[in-house]
Length: 84
Image (tube, rainbow, N blue to C red; front, side, top):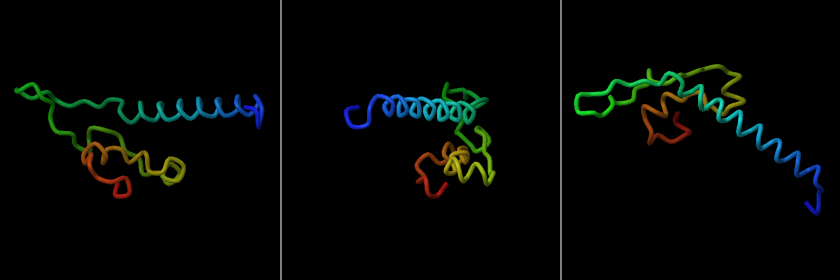
């Protein structure tokens, strides 16, 4: 605050709030409607690609760093980000 002033601090906090809101909105949309059947033993069925939404838009790939390729993350949770 001492170097750049209160205006810069307010600007940075505002950017952080907007970033968090955007990320959480995308997170909600990716998981909206995620439903799996409960098995007889009380556990849920294995996660498959059809259990979450995917998008292959060039614009989304560029601006969201392939974040929309989310169903692969659920189907293969140990796969590295670069392989999604």
